Length: 292
Ligand code: PMP
Image 1: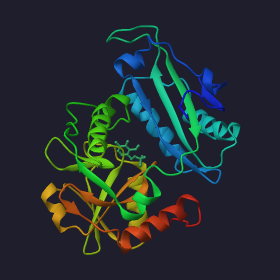
Image 2 (image 1 turned 30 degrees about the horizontal axis):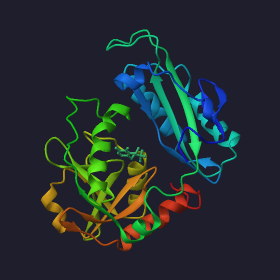
Image 3 (image 1 turned 45 degrees about the vertical axis):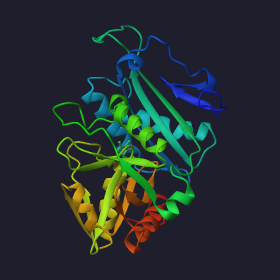
Image 4 (image 1 turned 60 degrees about the vertical axis):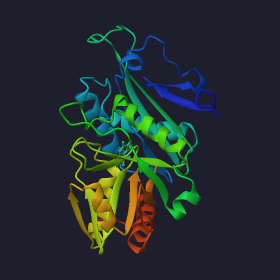
């Protein structure tokens, strides 16, 4: 079903509007100049996982893009909960987005109004259950994550997804599920919509999030793994080091924890550590595992 033709309600600038009527004008600054920031979060059994962390990241992303959201964090938190309730969902993916309106069109957008919308829908699994069971296959992305001097790399901003969509499309055309992006220095960065972890001799390694999104799932998984007694090392990882890792998985709100079977010429097998973290993560988000 196309995303503009569904039943339900979308929260738009403080009010609920019928799903099909939640539209913007073609001369919207966010559409022309990518002045838009967004979030992706999930509700599990009536509770949104890390709700305030996501809302705070939305505000941080807006601030980085010099946009002012005309609501408070508490108001957006409440609106997220209300939108799930209004749509009768207890398990849902939530997509809050803020963008500059159509008062001005041009590079300068000083006098535009910032709009906010929240849409929620049922989205059980980002990758197919079959792919998740075997591990997904990734190829190398043609584009590299830019340096912090080139783009505001820590904002979850629409504009930063241009190279993600291009890389993901190229991968899919070759039969892969996703693409692994290197950063501007040539280190392993992240996939087009999730962070990556590797395992070698019982130790978990993950790239330092110094030029890409430090995912909320990434941070939760690092905390979870450390609480379970694993050593987690955040460091720069070179592509050729992948030969030494036995397990690999990606993390993200949509992807949750998904094992990886292949990145280019390197292969991995979902092993005990990945499987136990997947199990613990799914318990944690459903509050069946209480963290310190
Ligand atoms: N990197 C990118 C490019 C993403 O789009 C996402 C998903 N938001 C992530 C990482 C993971 O972030 P999170 O765990 O906060 O969803």
